[in-house]
Image (cartoon, rainbow over the protein chains, first blue to last red):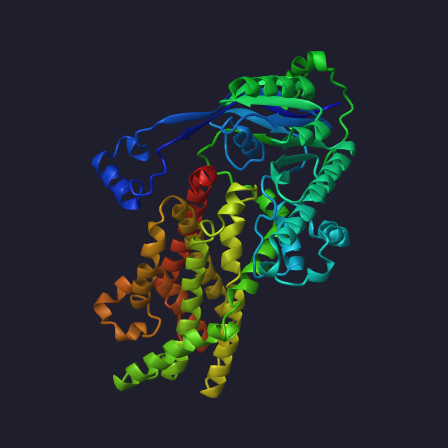
Length: 256
Length: 295
């Protein structure tokens, strides 16, 4: 199998204090620029630095299904956001081959005033589907979401279940070479979750590469062959899913 | 896009083998934030359907749940025109550029309101869609561009009603009318580059939200929108001409009503527009890398 993702020494630093809105207004920055015009200090507050990721390197081959596990704040979502180009790494490089689809959230860009149909096309375009693709799969999407009767109703009148099902259904019909899925299966009833996992497996069996973040051991076991274990922004283990998950469970068993 | 890469890489010497792979093998390379201008036009073009759907969304939702709907587009310039017509005719100011004052004012407000609304909707396009920045990757330039483009429909309706107003007052367009679209493009360019610039600054400094309405209000008063440049004393007129909107709007009106063009004010406007485009793109791309961290 050929290489499809190569992550080289990626680190991501966050400034904890950077976002205090009252300190970082245009006025205060301008004042600081005027006071110290030749330093770049005015751009930074007292920086408490947090390394969300530190020197992460790994490789993924085409067709692999990689599950990313770790406790809260381990850096899972940061890693996915770097891979999907939402945020830039502080250092290091990532190289990808092929189209990447990213489901960090389903229903991104849904507008409550628009109908299910309108939102399907808009959301499809947002997550990277071509108009033609959405058109071709439209009936399938509507059937998968089980909302045939309400497809032309504004989504603000949808129940939250209907809303999520439509959002999932669109996402489930995205089929790029690399698919990134973050925790999105956490909602929806058991039957629908099952349906989603089957759909993801279908995509995986099709030779697509999947990166999957979840806290559900069951879902991880069913979908992922390879596991990547993050702890405090560092790579703790990378290998067969059952070994990695085993270690994770032992670690967390100890802690509790 | 994906072609089968036939070379089989065995897992035991994967890292050794993969080091030999050149960067050309990969289609996307993600690196730390850079500071150079790196507009990726090909990527923007690839996302043209997304641009279309976002523009369509903005148009569809703009007047949802309003009683008067799209008529608001026409009411705004009409009300302004009526107010200023009453005021200015009482002041004895009639027929600037040899057209009845209401026609003159309406032509100005139609274009001005488009510009003002385009700038402000562009400026809030990023902070108004945080999920499109933090939850998914797309070329962020599409957001201000589509927010601004959605106003073009309003402009079109405004221009159609301008033709009707001209017909009512029996004003015929000059032979120079063919140049009018060029000046509308100039207005659009200035508005778009300012919208792009402010959208990026707004992500970090929400002050923009509070300053912009005041600035737009003041800008209206220093631009010959509801008065003509002839009403300004000749010795201070050059100051007015340094305002890029004077040339853009003045040129549009001159083309529309067959008056003479002022090459100085038009040149100022074109030069400022070009500088604004370069500046806006430069600043936007510099700030883009941190949008998701900061918003």
